[in-house]
Image 1 (cartoon, rainbow, N blue to C red):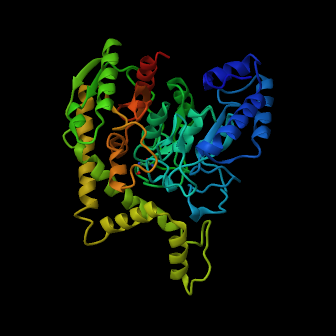
Image 2: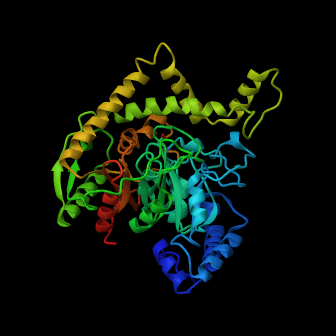
Image 3: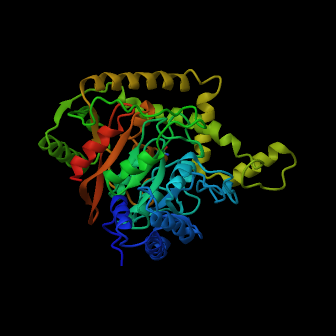
Length: 472
Ligand code: GLN
Protein backbone atom coordinates (compact mmCIF):
# COMPACT_ATOMS: atom_id res chain seq x y z
CA UNK A 1 0.00 0.00 0.00
CA UNK A 2 1.36 3.39 -0.94
CA UNK A 3 0.90 5.96 1.82
CA UNK A 4 -0.91 8.59 -0.26
CA UNK A 5 -1.67 10.77 2.74
CA UNK A 6 1.92 11.82 3.32
CA UNK A 7 3.06 11.61 -0.26
CA UNK A 8 4.22 14.72 -2.10
CA UNK A 9 5.39 15.28 -5.67
CA UNK A 10 8.96 15.52 -4.48
CA UNK A 11 8.74 12.30 -2.45
CA UNK A 12 6.96 10.38 -5.23
CA UNK A 13 9.75 11.37 -7.61
CA UNK A 14 12.33 10.03 -5.16
CA UNK A 15 10.35 6.78 -4.79
CA UNK A 16 10.32 6.39 -8.58
CA UNK A 17 14.09 6.85 -8.62
CA UNK A 18 14.51 4.17 -5.97
CA UNK A 19 12.01 1.88 -7.72
CA UNK A 20 9.89 1.68 -4.55
CA UNK A 21 6.80 1.73 -6.75
CA UNK A 22 5.96 2.40 -10.37
CA UNK A 23 3.96 5.22 -11.94
CA UNK A 24 1.33 2.62 -12.78
CA UNK A 25 1.05 1.48 -9.18
CA UNK A 26 0.77 5.06 -8.03
CA UNK A 27 -1.90 5.84 -10.63
CA UNK A 28 -3.82 2.73 -9.57
CA UNK A 29 -3.80 3.89 -5.94
CA UNK A 30 -5.17 7.26 -6.93
CA UNK A 31 -7.83 5.77 -9.17
CA UNK A 32 -8.98 3.59 -6.30
CA UNK A 33 -9.11 6.53 -3.93
CA UNK A 34 -11.03 8.61 -6.44
CA UNK A 35 -13.48 5.76 -6.96
CA UNK A 36 -14.24 5.60 -3.25
CA UNK A 37 -14.24 9.35 -2.48
CA UNK A 38 -15.41 11.14 -5.60
CA UNK A 39 -19.08 10.09 -5.50
CA UNK A 40 -19.43 12.11 -2.30
CA UNK A 41 -16.93 14.94 -2.86
CA UNK A 42 -17.64 15.54 -6.60
CA UNK A 43 -14.13 16.87 -7.26
CA UNK A 44 -13.80 15.19 -10.67
CA UNK A 45 -16.28 15.64 -13.49
CA UNK A 46 -14.53 12.92 -15.45
CA UNK A 47 -11.77 10.45 -14.71
CA UNK A 48 -9.92 9.63 -17.93
CA UNK A 49 -9.98 6.10 -19.28
CA UNK A 50 -6.36 6.22 -20.41
CA UNK A 51 -4.74 6.97 -17.04
CA UNK A 52 -2.96 3.60 -16.82
CA UNK A 53 -1.75 3.93 -20.41
CA UNK A 54 -0.31 7.37 -19.57
CA UNK A 55 1.33 5.90 -16.46
CA UNK A 56 2.77 3.08 -18.58
CA UNK A 57 4.44 5.63 -20.84
CA UNK A 58 5.83 7.38 -17.78
CA UNK A 59 7.21 4.06 -16.48
CA UNK A 60 9.08 3.53 -19.74
CA UNK A 61 10.73 6.91 -19.29
CA UNK A 62 11.55 6.14 -15.66
CA UNK A 63 13.06 2.79 -16.68
CA UNK A 64 15.32 4.61 -19.15
CA UNK A 65 16.77 6.56 -16.22
CA UNK A 66 16.26 9.81 -18.07
CA UNK A 67 13.13 11.29 -16.50
CA UNK A 68 11.82 14.52 -15.08
CA UNK A 69 10.53 15.57 -11.71
CA UNK A 70 6.91 15.38 -12.93
CA UNK A 71 7.25 12.12 -14.86
CA UNK A 72 4.52 9.77 -13.63
CA UNK A 73 3.06 12.34 -11.22
CA UNK A 74 -0.77 12.10 -11.17
CA UNK A 75 -2.48 15.48 -11.59
CA UNK A 76 -6.02 16.81 -11.75
CA UNK A 77 -6.73 19.48 -14.38
CA UNK A 78 -9.43 22.13 -14.08
CA UNK A 79 -12.20 21.72 -16.64
CA UNK A 80 -11.35 25.03 -18.35
CA UNK A 81 -7.86 23.94 -19.49
CA UNK A 82 -7.70 22.16 -22.84
CA UNK A 83 -6.22 18.71 -23.32
CA UNK A 84 -6.19 17.59 -26.96
CA UNK A 85 -8.93 15.03 -27.63
CA UNK A 86 -10.53 15.32 -24.19
CA UNK A 87 -13.82 16.90 -23.23
CA UNK A 88 -13.67 20.36 -21.67
CA UNK A 89 -16.80 22.14 -20.45
CA UNK A 90 -15.84 24.77 -17.85
CA UNK A 91 -18.62 23.04 -15.85
CA UNK A 92 -21.15 24.65 -18.19
CA UNK A 93 -24.04 23.11 -20.09
CA UNK A 94 -23.23 25.36 -23.02
CA UNK A 95 -20.11 23.31 -23.75
CA UNK A 96 -21.90 19.97 -23.72
CA UNK A 97 -20.13 17.65 -26.13
CA UNK A 98 -17.15 19.95 -26.75
CA UNK A 99 -13.85 18.16 -27.28
CA UNK A 100 -10.62 20.15 -27.14
CA UNK A 101 -8.82 20.25 -30.51
CA UNK A 102 -5.39 21.12 -29.09
CA UNK A 103 -3.30 21.15 -25.91
CA UNK A 104 -3.05 24.24 -23.74
CA UNK A 105 0.57 25.35 -23.46
CA UNK A 106 0.70 24.27 -19.80
CA UNK A 107 -0.52 20.80 -20.84
CA UNK A 108 2.09 20.60 -23.58
CA UNK A 109 4.76 21.38 -21.02
CA UNK A 110 3.45 18.79 -18.57
CA UNK A 111 3.17 16.19 -21.33
CA UNK A 112 6.80 16.83 -22.24
CA UNK A 113 7.65 15.64 -18.73
CA UNK A 114 5.16 12.70 -19.00
CA UNK A 115 2.98 13.79 -16.11
CA UNK A 116 -0.20 11.71 -15.74
CA UNK A 117 -3.58 13.44 -16.11
CA UNK A 118 -6.16 11.73 -13.93
CA UNK A 119 -9.17 13.71 -15.08
CA UNK A 120 -10.89 17.06 -15.32
CA UNK A 121 -11.98 18.74 -12.14
CA UNK A 122 -15.22 20.47 -11.18
CA UNK A 123 -15.44 24.26 -10.90
CA UNK A 124 -17.82 27.19 -10.90
CA UNK A 125 -19.23 27.66 -14.40
CA UNK A 126 -16.55 29.44 -16.47
CA UNK A 127 -14.67 30.05 -13.18
CA UNK A 128 -17.27 32.54 -11.97
CA UNK A 129 -17.71 32.00 -8.28
CA UNK A 130 -16.04 31.19 -5.00
CA UNK A 131 -17.71 27.94 -3.94
CA UNK A 132 -18.38 25.75 -7.04
CA UNK A 133 -22.08 26.21 -6.30
CA UNK A 134 -22.28 27.73 -9.79
CA UNK A 135 -21.16 24.48 -11.44
CA UNK A 136 -23.79 22.99 -13.75
CA UNK A 137 -22.76 19.61 -12.34
CA UNK A 138 -23.26 20.03 -8.60
CA UNK A 139 -21.20 21.49 -5.79
CA UNK A 140 -17.80 20.15 -4.67
CA UNK A 141 -17.94 19.22 -1.00
CA UNK A 142 -15.12 20.11 1.34
CA UNK A 143 -13.27 16.85 2.16
CA UNK A 144 -12.72 18.13 5.73
CA UNK A 145 -16.43 18.84 6.36
CA UNK A 146 -18.88 17.71 3.71
CA UNK A 147 -21.58 20.14 4.86
CA UNK A 148 -19.30 22.94 3.63
CA UNK A 149 -18.00 24.18 0.29
CA UNK A 150 -14.47 23.42 -0.85
CA UNK A 151 -14.24 26.97 -2.17
CA UNK A 152 -13.98 28.04 -5.76
CA UNK A 153 -13.84 28.43 -8.50
CA UNK A 154 -11.06 25.79 -8.63
CA UNK A 155 -12.78 23.79 -5.88
CA UNK A 156 -12.53 20.51 -7.77
CA UNK A 157 -8.76 20.81 -8.26
CA UNK A 158 -8.27 21.71 -4.62
CA UNK A 159 -10.61 19.03 -3.24
CA UNK A 160 -8.89 16.46 -5.48
CA UNK A 161 -5.57 17.22 -3.78
CA UNK A 162 -7.12 17.49 -0.30
CA UNK A 163 -9.04 14.20 -0.52
CA UNK A 164 -6.02 12.23 -1.74
CA UNK A 165 -7.39 12.18 -5.28
CA UNK A 166 -4.27 13.61 -6.92
CA UNK A 167 -0.76 14.69 -5.96
CA UNK A 168 -1.18 18.12 -7.48
CA UNK A 169 -3.56 20.00 -9.72
CA UNK A 170 -3.92 23.00 -11.96
CA UNK A 171 -6.52 25.68 -11.35
CA UNK A 172 -7.07 29.15 -12.74
CA UNK A 173 -7.16 32.35 -10.71
CA UNK A 174 -8.95 35.48 -11.89
CA UNK A 175 -9.76 36.92 -8.49
CA UNK A 176 -8.74 34.24 -6.00
CA UNK A 177 -9.96 30.98 -7.49
CA UNK A 178 -6.83 29.02 -6.65
CA UNK A 179 -6.04 30.70 -3.33
CA UNK A 180 -9.47 30.80 -1.66
CA UNK A 181 -10.26 27.08 -2.08
CA UNK A 182 -6.66 26.25 -1.11
CA UNK A 183 -7.22 28.14 2.15
CA UNK A 184 -10.57 26.38 2.73
CA UNK A 185 -9.08 22.90 2.25
CA UNK A 186 -5.69 23.37 3.94
CA UNK A 187 -3.44 23.13 0.89
CA UNK A 188 -1.06 25.46 -0.98
CA UNK A 189 -2.39 27.58 -3.87
CA UNK A 190 -0.31 29.86 -6.08
CA UNK A 191 -1.48 32.68 -8.32
CA UNK A 192 1.56 33.43 -10.48
CA UNK A 193 2.51 36.82 -11.92
CA UNK A 194 0.14 37.84 -14.74
CA UNK A 195 1.78 36.68 -17.96
CA UNK A 196 4.19 34.43 -16.08
CA UNK A 197 2.25 31.37 -17.28
CA UNK A 198 0.70 31.08 -20.73
CA UNK A 199 -3.10 31.37 -21.00
CA UNK A 200 -3.13 29.66 -24.40
CA UNK A 201 -5.73 26.89 -24.09
CA UNK A 202 -7.27 28.31 -20.92
CA UNK A 203 -10.90 29.32 -21.45
CA UNK A 204 -10.91 33.06 -20.92
CA UNK A 205 -12.87 34.64 -18.09
CA UNK A 206 -11.32 38.06 -17.40
CA UNK A 207 -8.41 38.21 -19.83
CA UNK A 208 -6.46 40.94 -18.06
CA UNK A 209 -6.76 39.06 -14.74
CA UNK A 210 -6.62 35.32 -15.56
CA UNK A 211 -3.65 33.13 -14.76
CA UNK A 212 -3.17 29.37 -14.36
CA UNK A 213 -1.77 28.29 -10.99
CA UNK A 214 -0.73 25.12 -9.16
CA UNK A 215 -2.49 23.48 -6.22
CA UNK A 216 -0.27 21.27 -4.07
CA UNK A 217 0.24 19.97 -0.56
CA UNK A 218 3.56 21.72 -0.03
CA UNK A 219 5.30 24.90 -1.12
CA UNK A 220 8.14 22.79 -2.53
CA UNK A 221 5.66 21.04 -4.82
CA UNK A 222 4.10 24.38 -5.78
CA UNK A 223 7.50 25.55 -6.97
CA UNK A 224 8.03 22.30 -8.92
CA UNK A 225 4.72 22.67 -10.78
CA UNK A 226 5.21 26.39 -11.33
CA UNK A 227 8.70 25.84 -12.77
CA UNK A 228 7.20 23.30 -15.17
CA UNK A 229 4.47 25.56 -16.55
CA UNK A 230 5.99 29.06 -16.46
CA UNK A 231 7.61 31.03 -19.23
CA UNK A 232 7.13 33.05 -22.41
CA UNK A 233 4.93 31.55 -25.10
CA UNK A 234 4.54 32.75 -28.65
CA UNK A 235 0.86 31.71 -28.52
CA UNK A 236 0.12 34.25 -25.75
CA UNK A 237 1.52 37.72 -26.38
CA UNK A 238 1.00 38.75 -22.75
CA UNK A 239 3.57 36.23 -21.50
CA UNK A 240 7.13 36.95 -20.54
CA UNK A 241 10.03 34.98 -19.14
CA UNK A 242 10.32 35.55 -15.46
CA UNK A 243 13.15 37.80 -14.50
CA UNK A 244 15.84 35.49 -13.19
CA UNK A 245 18.10 38.31 -12.05
CA UNK A 246 16.46 38.85 -8.70
CA UNK A 247 18.85 40.43 -6.26
CA UNK A 248 18.18 37.77 -3.70
CA UNK A 249 15.73 34.93 -3.34
CA UNK A 250 14.64 35.73 0.13
CA UNK A 251 12.65 38.51 1.60
CA UNK A 252 13.32 40.18 4.91
CA UNK A 253 10.62 42.77 5.43
CA UNK A 254 6.91 42.00 5.48
CA UNK A 255 4.36 44.76 5.08
CA UNK A 256 1.02 44.29 6.80
CA UNK A 257 -1.81 46.63 5.78
CA UNK A 258 -3.44 46.39 9.21
CA UNK A 259 -6.05 48.95 8.18
CA UNK A 260 -7.76 46.48 5.84
CA UNK A 261 -8.39 44.10 8.72
CA UNK A 262 -10.74 46.71 10.15
CA UNK A 263 -13.19 46.29 7.28
CA UNK A 264 -16.57 44.77 8.05
CA UNK A 265 -17.27 41.07 7.73
CA UNK A 266 -13.90 39.62 8.74
CA UNK A 267 -14.23 36.69 11.14
CA UNK A 268 -12.46 37.59 14.43
CA UNK A 269 -10.99 34.06 14.53
CA UNK A 270 -9.41 34.70 11.12
CA UNK A 271 -7.85 37.92 12.45
CA UNK A 272 -6.52 36.08 15.47
CA UNK A 273 -5.04 33.34 13.31
CA UNK A 274 -3.49 35.98 11.05
CA UNK A 275 -1.90 37.79 13.99
CA UNK A 276 -0.49 34.45 15.20
CA UNK A 277 1.00 33.86 11.73
CA UNK A 278 2.60 37.30 11.75
CA UNK A 279 4.07 36.55 15.19
CA UNK A 280 5.46 33.28 13.83
CA UNK A 281 7.07 35.13 10.91
CA UNK A 282 8.55 37.62 13.35
CA UNK A 283 10.03 34.72 15.34
CA UNK A 284 11.49 33.41 12.07
CA UNK A 285 13.42 36.67 11.80
CA UNK A 286 11.23 38.77 9.51
CA UNK A 287 10.78 42.46 10.14
CA UNK A 288 7.11 43.46 10.20
CA UNK A 289 6.02 46.92 9.05
CA UNK A 290 2.55 48.43 9.28
CA UNK A 291 1.84 49.77 5.78
CA UNK A 292 -0.95 51.73 4.15
CA UNK A 293 -2.53 50.82 0.81
CA UNK A 294 -4.85 53.84 0.55
CA UNK A 295 -6.99 52.64 -2.36
CA UNK A 296 -7.19 48.95 -1.54
CA UNK A 297 -10.69 49.35 -0.14
CA UNK A 298 -11.85 49.93 -3.75
CA UNK A 299 -10.35 46.65 -5.00
CA UNK A 300 -13.51 44.62 -4.77
CA UNK A 301 -15.57 47.28 -6.57
CA UNK A 302 -12.90 47.65 -9.27
CA UNK A 303 -12.73 43.88 -9.74
CA UNK A 304 -16.50 43.48 -9.98
CA UNK A 305 -16.57 46.07 -12.79
CA UNK A 306 -13.50 45.12 -14.83
CA UNK A 307 -14.04 41.35 -14.53
CA UNK A 308 -17.68 41.29 -15.75
CA UNK A 309 -16.80 43.74 -18.53
CA UNK A 310 -14.22 41.25 -19.80
CA UNK A 311 -16.54 38.31 -19.07
CA UNK A 312 -19.32 39.81 -21.20
CA UNK A 313 -16.96 40.06 -24.13
CA UNK A 314 -15.35 36.62 -23.61
CA UNK A 315 -18.70 34.85 -23.32
CA UNK A 316 -19.86 36.25 -26.70
CA UNK A 317 -18.14 33.40 -28.53
CA UNK A 318 -20.56 30.84 -27.08
CA UNK A 319 -23.29 31.37 -29.63
CA UNK A 320 -24.56 27.88 -30.37
CA UNK A 321 -22.63 27.77 -33.64
CA UNK A 322 -18.93 27.54 -32.88
CA UNK A 323 -18.76 25.41 -29.73
CA UNK A 324 -20.75 22.78 -27.83
CA UNK A 325 -24.47 23.17 -27.34
CA UNK A 326 -26.84 24.16 -30.14
CA UNK A 327 -30.53 24.46 -29.32
CA UNK A 328 -32.71 23.87 -32.40
CA UNK A 329 -35.87 25.74 -33.29
CA UNK A 330 -34.77 29.37 -33.77
CA UNK A 331 -36.43 31.09 -36.72
CA UNK A 332 -33.27 33.05 -37.49
CA UNK A 333 -29.70 33.41 -36.29
CA UNK A 334 -30.56 35.77 -33.44
CA UNK A 335 -33.17 33.33 -32.12
CA UNK A 336 -30.58 30.55 -32.29
CA UNK A 337 -28.25 32.63 -30.16
CA UNK A 338 -30.95 33.50 -27.67
CA UNK A 339 -32.26 29.96 -27.32
CA UNK A 340 -28.82 28.41 -26.98
CA UNK A 341 -27.44 30.99 -24.56
CA UNK A 342 -30.68 31.00 -22.58
CA UNK A 343 -30.49 27.24 -22.12
CA UNK A 344 -26.74 26.88 -21.81
CA UNK A 345 -25.64 29.58 -19.36
CA UNK A 346 -26.39 29.42 -15.64
CA UNK A 347 -27.67 32.39 -13.61
CA UNK A 348 -24.27 33.70 -12.40
CA UNK A 349 -22.82 33.79 -15.92
CA UNK A 350 -25.92 35.63 -17.14
CA UNK A 351 -25.71 38.09 -14.25
CA UNK A 352 -22.09 38.91 -15.14
CA UNK A 353 -22.85 39.29 -18.84
CA UNK A 354 -25.58 41.76 -17.92
CA UNK A 355 -23.37 43.75 -15.54
CA UNK A 356 -20.50 43.69 -18.04
CA UNK A 357 -22.50 44.96 -20.98
CA UNK A 358 -24.00 47.63 -18.74
CA UNK A 359 -20.69 49.02 -17.45
CA UNK A 360 -19.29 49.03 -20.99
CA UNK A 361 -22.29 50.62 -22.66
CA UNK A 362 -21.80 54.04 -24.25
CA UNK A 363 -23.77 55.95 -21.62
CA UNK A 364 -22.14 54.31 -18.61
CA UNK A 365 -18.57 53.45 -19.57
CA UNK A 366 -17.17 56.69 -18.16
CA UNK A 367 -19.04 56.32 -14.90
CA UNK A 368 -18.07 52.68 -14.34
CA UNK A 369 -15.57 50.93 -16.60
CA UNK A 370 -13.24 53.87 -17.23
CA UNK A 371 -13.37 54.91 -13.60
CA UNK A 372 -12.50 51.36 -12.56
CA UNK A 373 -9.51 51.44 -14.94
CA UNK A 374 -8.30 54.66 -13.32
CA UNK A 375 -8.59 53.14 -9.87
CA UNK A 376 -6.81 50.02 -11.06
CA UNK A 377 -3.85 52.26 -11.87
CA UNK A 378 -4.04 53.93 -8.47
CA UNK A 379 -4.09 50.61 -6.66
CA UNK A 380 -1.06 49.50 -8.69
CA UNK A 381 0.72 52.72 -7.73
CA UNK A 382 -0.04 52.03 -4.05
CA UNK A 383 1.63 48.64 -4.36
CA UNK A 384 4.63 50.09 -6.16
CA UNK A 385 5.13 52.52 -3.31
CA UNK A 386 4.66 49.80 -0.71
CA UNK A 387 7.17 47.51 -2.40
CA UNK A 388 9.77 50.26 -2.22
CA UNK A 389 9.56 49.85 1.56
CA UNK A 390 8.86 46.15 2.07
CA UNK A 391 9.71 42.93 0.22
CA UNK A 392 6.35 41.18 0.51
CA UNK A 393 2.86 41.95 1.81
CA UNK A 394 0.81 39.66 4.05
CA UNK A 395 -2.96 39.40 4.54
CA UNK A 396 -5.35 36.56 5.38
CA UNK A 397 -6.39 34.67 2.21
CA UNK A 398 -10.12 34.79 2.93
CA UNK A 399 -12.22 36.59 5.55
CA UNK A 400 -13.71 33.32 6.85
CA UNK A 401 -13.12 29.56 6.86
CA UNK A 402 -15.11 27.33 4.46
CA UNK A 403 -18.78 28.27 4.68
CA UNK A 404 -21.81 26.00 4.63
CA UNK A 405 -23.19 24.89 1.28
CA UNK A 406 -26.08 27.27 0.49
CA UNK A 407 -25.05 29.79 3.15
CA UNK A 408 -24.11 32.58 0.74
CA UNK A 409 -27.07 32.51 -1.60
CA UNK A 410 -26.93 36.28 -2.01
CA UNK A 411 -24.30 37.06 -4.71
CA UNK A 412 -22.99 40.13 -2.88
CA UNK A 413 -22.16 38.15 0.26
CA UNK A 414 -20.35 35.63 -1.95
CA UNK A 415 -18.34 38.41 -3.66
CA UNK A 416 -17.15 39.63 -0.24
CA UNK A 417 -15.24 36.37 0.22
CA UNK A 418 -12.83 37.70 -2.45
CA UNK A 419 -11.92 40.81 -0.48
CA UNK A 420 -8.25 39.88 0.08
CA UNK A 421 -7.55 37.99 -3.14
CA UNK A 422 -8.76 40.20 -6.02
CA UNK A 423 -6.08 42.84 -5.50
CA UNK A 424 -3.21 40.63 -6.69
CA UNK A 425 -5.10 40.04 -9.96
CA UNK A 426 -5.87 43.74 -10.37
CA UNK A 427 -2.18 44.57 -9.96
CA UNK A 428 -0.89 41.43 -11.72
CA UNK A 429 1.47 40.43 -8.93
CA UNK A 430 2.09 36.88 -7.65
CA UNK A 431 0.40 35.69 -4.47
CA UNK A 432 0.39 32.43 -2.56
CA UNK A 433 -1.95 30.98 0.04
CA UNK A 434 -0.27 28.77 2.60
CA UNK A 435 -2.07 26.81 5.31
CA UNK A 436 -1.82 28.70 8.61
CA UNK A 437 -3.63 26.37 10.99
CA UNK A 438 -7.28 26.08 11.87
CA UNK A 439 -10.06 28.16 13.42
CA UNK A 440 -13.29 27.02 15.10
CA UNK A 441 -16.15 26.70 12.59
CA UNK A 442 -19.35 25.08 13.80
CA UNK A 443 -18.43 21.94 15.69
CA UNK A 444 -15.10 21.54 13.88
CA UNK A 445 -11.79 23.28 13.44
CA UNK A 446 -11.25 24.18 9.81
CA UNK A 447 -8.19 25.44 7.93
CA UNK A 448 -7.51 29.02 6.93
CA UNK A 449 -4.74 30.47 4.81
CA UNK A 450 -2.07 33.13 5.01
CA UNK A 451 -1.70 35.10 1.79
CA UNK A 452 1.68 36.52 0.80
CA UNK A 453 1.99 38.86 -2.19
CA UNK A 454 5.27 39.85 -3.86
CA UNK A 455 6.33 42.24 -6.65
CA UNK A 456 5.97 41.08 -10.27
CA UNK A 457 8.09 38.01 -11.05
CA UNK A 458 9.15 37.57 -7.43
CA UNK A 459 7.64 34.10 -6.98
CA UNK A 460 10.95 32.98 -5.42
CA UNK A 461 10.16 35.28 -2.45
CA UNK A 462 6.88 33.43 -1.96
CA UNK A 463 8.44 29.98 -2.15
CA UNK A 464 11.27 30.87 0.21
CA UNK A 465 9.01 32.43 2.81
CA UNK A 466 6.37 29.70 2.43
CA UNK A 467 8.91 26.93 3.00
CA UNK A 468 10.24 28.66 6.09
CA UNK A 469 6.71 29.21 7.41
CA UNK A 470 5.76 25.56 6.95
CA UNK A 471 9.16 24.26 8.02
CA UNK A 472 9.81 22.47 4.71
N1 GLN B 1 -14.55 34.36 -6.70
C1 GLN B 1 -14.12 35.24 -7.72
C2 GLN B 1 -15.23 35.48 -8.71
O1 GLN B 1 -16.28 34.98 -8.50
C3 GLN B 1 -12.87 34.75 -8.37
C4 GLN B 1 -13.10 33.81 -9.49
C5 GLN B 1 -11.82 33.36 -10.14
O2 GLN B 1 -10.72 33.65 -9.67
N2 GLN B 1 -11.95 32.67 -11.25
O3 GLN B 1 -15.07 36.14 -9.68
